[in-house]
Length: 323
Image (cartoon, rainbow, N blue to C red; front, side):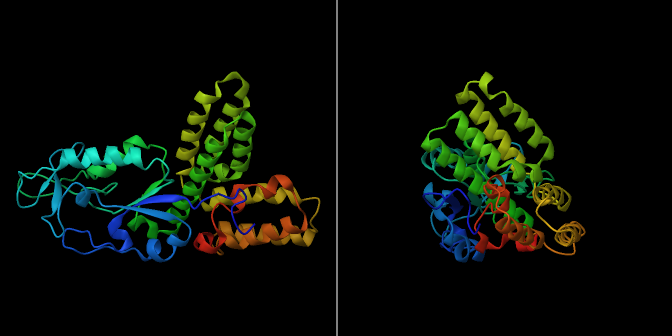
């Protein structure tokens, strides 16, 4: 249980704003290197760097651009030469790259960028003041519209351990689904995938866990080609919800129940104590998880062993140590 139970044939590919990898592509000739991406995540992912502003022909260095007008449909123009409007080229490049990067499993965008920012990007009004409502970078907007299920996140938000763990969990789920599609989707394969993600789904969205279970309970009544994309979209939306100490504790209780016949009263008491300590914020998630895996090694259970919840991402990333 030191790696995802379903081995991926290749490292998942991630699109990424090129400046986050240290590429000197920003308007001032600089970069915004992310130590997390460039020195930690690069061991587990193949990055595909993209700088839409350079790609559409803006130089390095260059006049900065910013969003102006309606926050719901802003334009990207020069900060000095307002007549330099690059809105259409940025949107067109987003559409193009959405088609070309069909094999990526996630995307890390540069925050607050008028081309790449996912949210909270300043949109300036007449007089030079930003509006209260925020916008979205035009490249990111066009790209994400074509890939609504793709895990996306901004670099700055990845400094939050909960958001970081959630994003990387979704990336590996996405990668596993893409591999499943490549191998040929069958009703049995779909049910097996859902079975693996049962407890991860329960931790993220208990209500959707029940809904998707009912959906697949009537699998024989549906066209698999129509049902599978709907199932996956709803799964990815559910996994985007960050699990809480309460929902994690609920899942840990379910999993510990599999050992109720095998454990001594002392072992059961220890397990319950650690779950309680985790729920109350005394210890991180990795503590009760480690004990649970210890009991699973001593009391093998095939159904539990294949649960993605136990190891949804490489153990060496230590993502659950901070949860």
